[in-house]
Length: 153
Image (cartoon, rainbow, N blue to C red; front, side, top):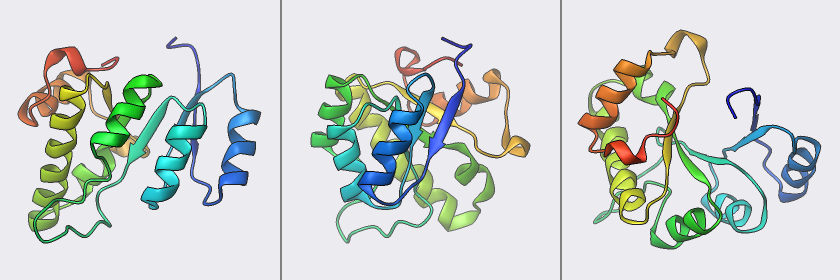
């Protein structure tokens, strides 16, 4: 499986995304968008491997963290064997209050994924943010991720 290359799809329309997915069936497909409705539609209707959830641009609701994931999405991900991606670049490049909000949302997603037995994985888009697996394991542990949830570190 490690020999497979991955492709990041960031199109904003369902049709374009579907076309890109069909063109890249031989690859590990990572999909990401800032649109939660689109994320859900892709999760439900398309064959992707990883849904990468970005946190940096989100605004939390008053009583609840807006983490891009909920019970319904977690169940779909579980059923379709889709891994939830954590954007490592965002963690590394954020500071102060913004970083603590991002981490709080990620922790919330980890709890949800753990409860629903959904795998999670750190995704690094920028080479300069690559970390070794030892550091990633440490971070995952701090964030409350049990070992069983780690995906190929």
